[in-house]
Image (cartoon, rainbow, N blue to C red):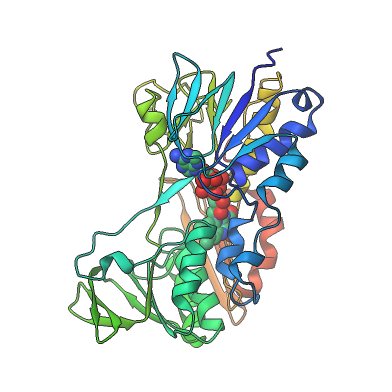
Length: 397
Ligand SMILES: Cc1cc2nc3c(=O)[nH]c(=O)nc-3n(C[C@H](O)[C@H](O)[C@H](O)COP(=O)(O)OP(=O)(O)OC[C@H]3O[C@@H](n4cnc5c(N)ncnc54)[C@H](O)[C@@H]3O)c2cc1C
């Protein structure tokens, strides 16, 4: 098989997991491997960022290994602070912003996603932070130092987790979202309302049905003006309104993109020498990238990229292996009232059956014939996750 170098772009969980899985395989051990990242290449678990305050961890205590240690562990070359400018497919080279060119046999795009910036007016709009990596988290913690009032835009997974972590450590948190309850995209109303109440009991103030329109500096603090005319006063503002897969490098190289970088079940882009996985990828259940009208799965969570890394490593090592996704419930890390959700597929036919008791909410989404297609569990009911997950159909069989 080919001995040409494999170049992995990105050292997040997707990039590092792929490298690790490759080195576990006999055939994968022999391949030359280079990883490239624009950050410092430290290995860390991103989900730890939204629970670090309550665990008493400073940003520099979160990483598990630095780039030198990872290079030794993985028997790989790791280029840090090396932003990629473009991929020259004709010359089979990855071109870095500093002009260096890296010849490749195959490329893995593990470029992650970009936080969506809400359109905000005002002289302090640029002071609204977002956290999607360790550097962003360090900036957030520096800004937070000695301050109490935090405004969070977005009551999705990341917004709710930060709200819990901040409120549990004595901060005064206000969360604003246009939806009517937290995690509204994933949770039926009863489960969302329960989380809303439990986090309110911890001290979180909710503002639903509103968007932030402008942010100004007033008397040394931030004033966030909402669409209903009211204002939130805060020392720090955090935006958690969503993520957009990083598709620009792929699109500029002429690869097919949709919401993410389009790949087939072998995680191949429209160029078979280039693969993609993790937050940047959109996986087509069937068909090939480039065929018109195809839409795939964009799943910006850890479990899908772990499944992807396992399959992709085998494929790169010479044994083509389609990615399979079992049902992959997502745990929302709100220790004040934990949540686990396995949303039904978009457009799935069925209805929620909701039961609530003092422990929390148990909501099951069933098809008309009774099959379980999704669930949402809160509080004490999260312990039912393993049994219910076994009943769910796989996302990609
Ligand atoms: C606060 C928070 C909490 C989370 N909690 C959970 C959770 O509990 N459970 C869960 O399943 N998921 C969670 N997630 C999501 C999960 O962390 C992500 O899905 C996962 O970490 C994405 O990994 P990735 O490797 O695809 O992307 P990233 O980690 O974003 O890595 C992208 C890499 O690409 C590099 N890169 C980008 N552009 C370039 C360029 N031009 N040149 C060179 N390098 C480049 C970056 O430097 C980086 O190394 C959470 C996310 C956040 C932000």
